[in-house]
Amino acid sequence: MPDRFFKGHDGTISRAVRAFPVAGLIIAIVPALLMLLLQSGDPLVASLIALSLMTLLTGGLHEDGLADAADGLGGGRDSEHALTIMKDSRIGSYGVVALILSFGLRAASLAALARHEPAAAALALLAAAAFSRAVMVTHWHALPSARESGVAAGAGLPEESARNLALLIGVAAAAVLAVPVLGVPKVLLSLIAAAAAGFGFTRLVRRKLGGHTGDTIGATQQISEIVMLASLALVA
Image (cartoon, rainbow, N blue to C red):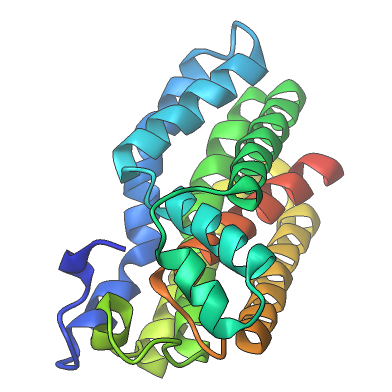
């Protein structure tokens, strides 16, 4: 994750993470509008264009974390080996597969939602961008740093109040945006599924690495976003 988010143990990080769901909304606004404008064409193409733009806006930050985490967790013999793999700038087969699945599942899910209701896809993209970043903060808060040094280790952990506020904002954003179009039961199911995916990944990281890294934080965002969008598409 970018160094500007890590300012040490002075409370800055907790102030920053509270706004992560809001940052997700801001990042996703233009891609969501673009996808809505392109719905008259092929929904799958429109979805891929929107996701490409969102990736450009974030610099592929969380996608990079997903790829590195997949390589480390998939190919590491033990925690030390996994952490070494994750520091390598080269991408391996696990990382490639993870990225293909990430873009493929998200694009297919958004296209399915667009076929159901054009506005549903754009609103789901916004809702997932907000809530997945709240799940990301929860992962960060739940685990100690897996490394004694490094950017994430120097940042410390978000405070519990910051995590709770991030979750509140993420849930509220998802409810306000998606419920009017998709209804309470479907949105609630998608939130539970995304949260469960984040929890399961956190359990895996705890067992495999003993703590979080910047890569696992970014991977949590990707995994919860994928699951939330896929859940909405399946029930819509």
